[in-house]
Figure 1 (cartoon, rainbow, N blue to C red):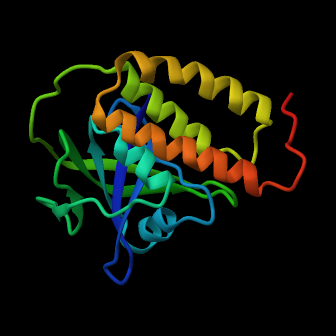
Figure 2 (tube, rainbow, N blue to C red):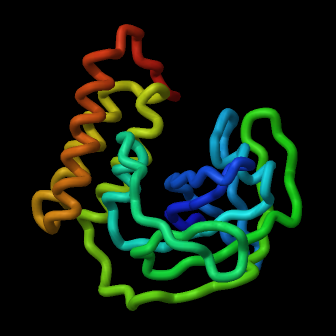
Figure 3 (cartoon, rainbow, N blue to C red):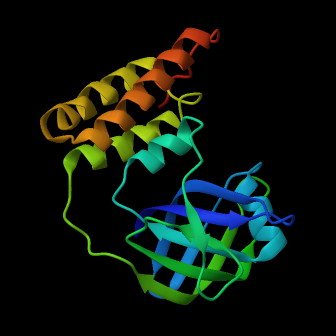
Length: 193
């Protein structure tokens, strides 16, 4: 199962980094698989630690993809690390094994501490649409424009029908990102099979 989360890491010099990540969970095994090059990958290699944050604020996913990474952090409970101040819950993890790969190594982690901070208030279709659009925006350089346009139009329906202020703000950031990329793109888009 892949869980859409926000992963916080510390670099070798102690610099915090916040990134959206789909982490894979199978039983007790938790896998973080960043592509090279990646600040998260460098931090995992340097420290062997991360915090997996669970949030219902879709702005974090959209924000990280649009250059907005200044979200409040507080110290983790057990490991030397930081967590999102406004997370619903977090898992503090340590790397126990690495599957080497030249493009995308897989860091197998064990949870050393888990903590809940506030209850989950329910699902919001607009938040889910924003997360899907954020994932789409992370792949703009790989996708044909017809696919991007088709998916953004479909996701917009959920935003229009169910969004609150946070989801509308995040959606606006992503729409601006798509428009800016389209305006700057001078290459022919790749056609996927």
